[in-house]
Every structure is written in structure tokens, then in C-alpha cells.
Length: 343
Image (cartoon, rainbow, N blue to C red; front, side, top):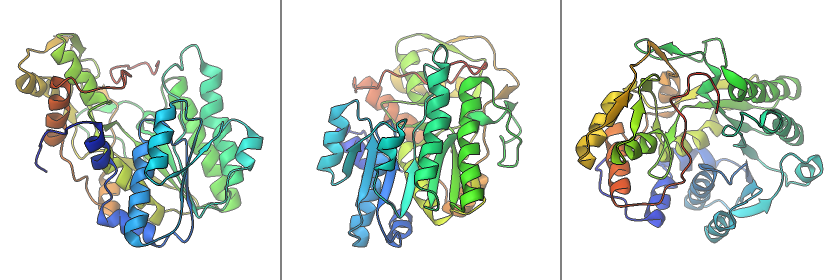
């Protein structure tokens, strides 16, 4: 894909929510409304918009219902303007969840990661209790559950990354509670027959947020880049959205587990050096890469759903141009360098 500069947030969000032909095909047979739970976060708004656009292209009159607390009212306004129905809801309240509309399919995106240290109880409630309420409310309804590669142990950097068959060994309470979320949905899938995909995502990126923004911003600001977690995977957020929606065609009971990320193992040092070339800065490093890192192998997802459309070099170029132009960011570091599971 040609790495033309992305000019502003409106153009960016159009790009991130542009459905592929495979997404249109996957949603054309939905047969009813799609409910997106936890749609107010970093990915939810563009995923909901992509679903709406895909349904429109297929000629479907089904609704896309985005459910969240919507602490940022502007996000809700933009979704309403894009034809997405929105519902303000605290997904930790049983009475509120019980009043949510029926659905033909559900995408569950709610999760807590940052602020876990010192807020462990709320992290566990968000990542385990809210899933229990949702899984009970939508028992039997096809569901794609967002999870994370953090459930895996750190893997050798030259081994290709964790497979879906790799036994979970979550490090820290965020990763432990994320595995708890998976277990809750797995229980309801087996006991209530809910067709499910567990969507283990490693590092969706776009110009306002993600590991590439973290690395590029540090290069731009001459801040040291810690190399201890010396390798990573990432995937363009638009591709991550598309693959998640396509997963609705793969749901089953017991759940199908899918790793979702890019095809490459990326070296943090090499990423920083490339940003340095594009930004005209010399990266500053500290430490040395360890022999292991948080890495996933997404070959199964690529075989079932197709490879990501946006390559790493294009994503880097987009992020670098965005940062150099002073584009807005979410100012939420990923802490990808943490090896102790503390966020």
C-alpha cells in the first residue's frame, strides 16, 4: 500500500473504518443486529463504523449498536453521526446489561489494562465480572471476544512466537485477569452452546496510539528507548478491525482461539532506526534485548481470514508523518517494554 500522508483525523478514521470485501461478505448474512460491547475505547469506534459501512454496502438494514459508558461524549456524537446506534451503559451493572437489546451477533471489546497496579479489584471486575454478565445476557448468541497475547509466556525472539496451542502463562494481574475473561466466555460457550471466537490481539497500531507511536515519539523527542523487550508484533488497526468482524463467520462451540497480529517479528532497535531516518533524529537506546519477548504467531488467522493489507513499512511511514506534522495522539503509552506484567 502506498504510504501517502494521512491528512487529519477525519481521513484517518475513514481509513481505519473502511470495510474490505471480505468484511462485507461476512456481515451480509448476519440476519440481525450487531451489538458491540465496550465500543468507546481505542478500537471500538472505528470497528463499529466499519461494521455499519459494511452492512450498508451489503444492503442490510440491520443495526450496529455500540454500547459503552462513553466518558468522551465526542466519540458518541461521531458514532451517532455515522449511523451507529449508541447506548450509554455501565457493563458492570447487571440491571443495565439485562436491558440491552437482543442481537444476532456480539463483539465484546471491554477490557482494563492500564492502571491495574493499585487498581487490581476493578481490573478483575472489568475483565471477569463484566464478561460473565455479558456472556449470560447473550448466551447462545455468536460472539467474538477481544483478548490479548499477554496471556502467553515470553517466547524466544527467534522462535516465531506463541501458537494458539501454547499453554497460557500470564505474567501479572492484567494478563491473569485477561485469561480469566477467556475462561468465562469459554465456560458459557461450552455450557450454553454460545458460538465463540477468542481473539488474541497483539498491538493494533495507528498514528494516535500504539507501539509505533511510542517508539516514534521517543525518537522525535530524543527520549531513551528501553531495549529489554527487544522484539514485538503489531498490526494496523484497520486490518485488526476487519479480521475481528470476519471472525463472526468462524464462531464455534467450544471456542476457536485465534492469534491476531502482523506476520513479522519486529526488532525494536530496527524500528527506532527507521523512525530516525524518517524523522531526521538519532535514536537513544538503553539496555540490551533479552532473549525472550511477548510474541505471537498469527499464521492460523492469516490462513483462515487473509493476511493484513497494510505492511509494517507503510504503518511506520504513516505514523512518522503524523508525528512530524504534530498530529494529535491519545497520550496513552502502551508500556510495551514492561516484562513484569505491571501496567
